Length: 372
Image (cartoon, rainbow, N blue to C red; front, side, top):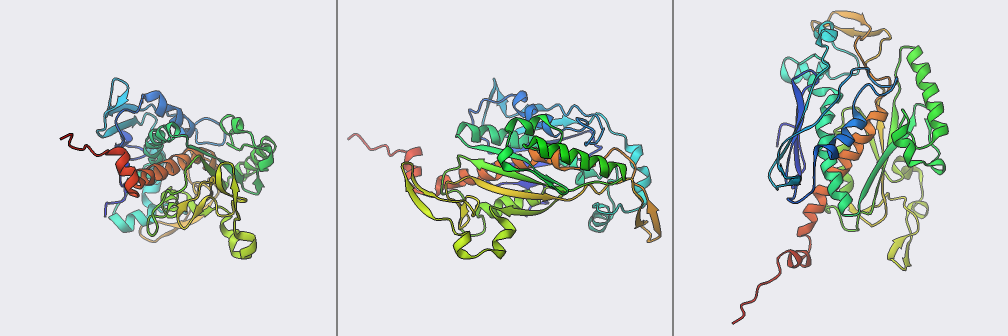
């Protein structure tokens, strides 16, 4: 077992760095040679998660500019480890001096202290949302590979507080152009109003993200412990603020009847398909050729300026108001993180699937018969 910073088996990533350290980054091992790749391909995704882009995100100003240190030569991947680095440029560690002596409610301060005996209290150190920079940078590479295979991963804000989108109003452009990352402009407006109310009350909001993976062929995922839904849930639950993951109809299956939950199979000009998709594109832990649909639930930002009760490290009870630059909601910036983790999960299982059939091996290694 690793110490928890490595994800994947064949397409393997290791993230590193802290919120207020010199830099953050990731090492990708197992990326096939010959992929056209430059920093702009990665920057496109990092720009979607960087801070300071709207009044609903932390006002910490970071360019989050990525540097490719290895693994790419003359614009193409070489098959060797790809090392990506993003410098920190806007650390204000003094904002966090006060919290060195107490445990912030809803944060990992207490648990890090119990695990390691001390902690990097500057912005949460390794437990900070800035840790996701490495995931997004690696995910950008995985997303480019999947795109060349005709597979698209699209995530968006599904709900903020009590406001849920109407899928019939779906606008893909709105995901990238609105501060909520909602694909429904009307719901997005109501969500912004709700966030303003939260901010006026010195509070924060939770929400949910939906992700749809299209073009994934049937047959991806291993039968038992590495089921496609199990790997996706593992990947998504590893994102700091995620508290629940649903596949397809998710929690609603527990109140459904079998006749309602089963997806009928039908014959079409494109072969066998399903008439509905309650299963979310996964049966028996293996993709069935339908869109993979999942929903991720994210807790409210724990750093709020409203007074909260806690204790100092010596057990003394105190009342605190958390200072610093914090997002009133994490969800819009987490959308691209969900995309990245889904892409990394799917690509790793697709590479593993190359060993599932003799037919696949014969395609890669055709027999060379002796001409004599």
